[in-house]
Length: 336
Ligand code: PBG
Image: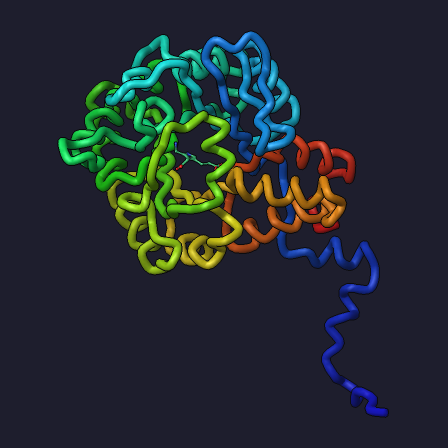
């Protein structure tokens, strides 16, 4: 038998009781740092469940308004709105139509909560185009970067007019942050903040989201979203967005990209957020529904990991669940 000599390190000492573990936890979850993504379906008279995202719905206008109020009451940091339009075209004209589904949702949300919760909107064309790409296409069927920037600028002005506090640039076009910033500033919208989805990867984990928005995409987004093989490029994209004036930067997806998140967190001088995407949600929900994983423990662990890697805030479909758990445990916010 070997026995540790006197003075040996015994890191288990600080793990001995729940109180010691609570005091020595390096990170904790906080509802104020969570953002709830919400889908608004044009013309829906009631909320419609999304099969691949159990517990998540496409909202009607009324149910969206109620959910935004719930988010405010739960004390979460913000909501991120996505529109599911009934008609789509090549240019995504619904995106900058003031009466389009997303711009309507922004006005509804602001009418309910004003400045009490941060209201953000997805700034991307994919939900509005009939081909499902994040931009407009050129004659050869490729996404035309610079023509798309003009569409993003128009969309940004419509979202700012609706009162959105933060616009989430998720299209991965080159120069989108600088171009949209300039368009907003020229229009007297210097106060509208820009969240840059800086390191957004071409990911299999967006699968359920594409059901949620009834995406028409044929093919993939590899000609504009990042290659999952690339770490350094995530940092490069972030530095470009910072130089173009991003107010916050984001890494997406989250769990499979914690290395990128850690890089971005150490390089950024603005808030760093992460998006725990639809496929991350679906994986845990499916395993939990089968009794193969403890849902609350797994959700807390994934979120703590994302925070530990350096995220200041996290977009998560579990935001309201987590806020409820945190209330129940007195805001302790640790692992379970
Ligand atoms: C683009 C957008 C996507 C997501 C958020 N914004 C889809 C995509 O890039 O294909 C995915 C979010 C998720 O999977 O939860 N509008």
